[in-house]
Length: 222
Length: 298
Image 1 (cartoon, rainbow over the protein chains, first blue to last red):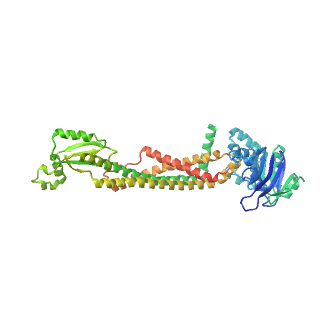
Image 2 (image 1 turned 180 degrees about the vertical axis):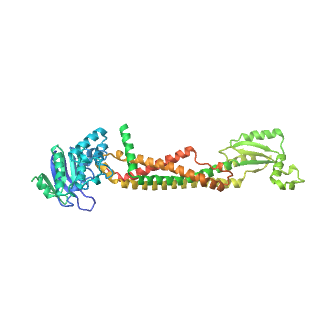
Image 3 (image 1 turned 135 degrees about the vertical axis):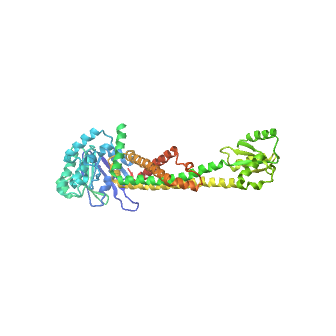
């Protein structure tokens, strides 16, 4: 599903590389933790996968498509099959929970009744179907992250990229969020979850890709 | 397609409803910028209108030594009327010239006691066609008439014409320069105000891009919103400037241009008013497009 070949990325010419000659493969349906200290290159790796950044060197294939050569007009189509979850949720505060989750489907031009059905199902799945008409700031941090996960899942993504999604949440809430990722993974979605939470990896052991200074230092399944 | 249009309109309305203060600021900026432009246009257009009115006075007067015989006069008339610049030719005989002079002297007309009509020459008053009321055309007509020795002297207000033409030239040049400057200033201000509204919505723009919105999908509602801001701003500018025109400007311009009666100082025609709204719409669209370039990055 995801293949990286000798990928290098540095943000400024003279600065040290955020990713340094990184090569790895993630098969379809895999669940992978990306770990490493701050500045290891976890976020950069995810940004390259959803085309927010371009590598300076190397090739990246996603679902058989070389995204390093992809024109900017094709990027939106790649993102329509990619769910993305952030540490800071990135929800629209002026929109209701329903509208936030419906947003990716609206963007894809889906019909209104399709959107309503799908959004309700997903919100029910994450346990927030009772809060459809509330606004993000009326919810707790954990609930907001559930909304963000629902927004990522509503498009039935091929890949789910999560950048420190539980960084701001307590452990009980974290477990609930990871449960949602596991559920998506069980339905066939490839999940890449960037975290430095060792306890999480211990509780839900899956393949771990460890980065340090932009280089792959370990790749193991506990 | 219809769903798409409805959706776009809903998004535009939502944006307007979502940030009424910023939208009002954008509309207000367009309105103020266009009001200044409208005032400027009113001054330039009315001065030009007055100038065109004054230019009707431009005529060539060819003086004759003696009253010519009727047949010869008709020949001259035909010849002069045949010139491309000439509109009308009127013969003023010595009697009429004397009568006019007496009338002009008014209460001092008794100064003419003892003088006969022969003190004033007969003349041909040649009015130029519209589009030929210039120093060049007047000189061309005079040049041709000089070849006829029966005409002793010519008068076509040479100094006045020269000054009038340089004034018109300055007005047009100054109008073009100042108008373009004002338009660019308006565009700059409008683009920056719209940039503020986009800055307030940068999260929305970022999230749209992240969930797979195409640049077209992201930009279209903002461009439509810019157009709507521009149209409303243009409309406000017209209403505001019409009110100010009625209250102050008409009277001010009348006294400035020494026009008797307000009826000759006019507001913009409906085509010009439509043009102001179109300029507003273009300002809004271009301003939005310039700002969107910075904020929408896929």
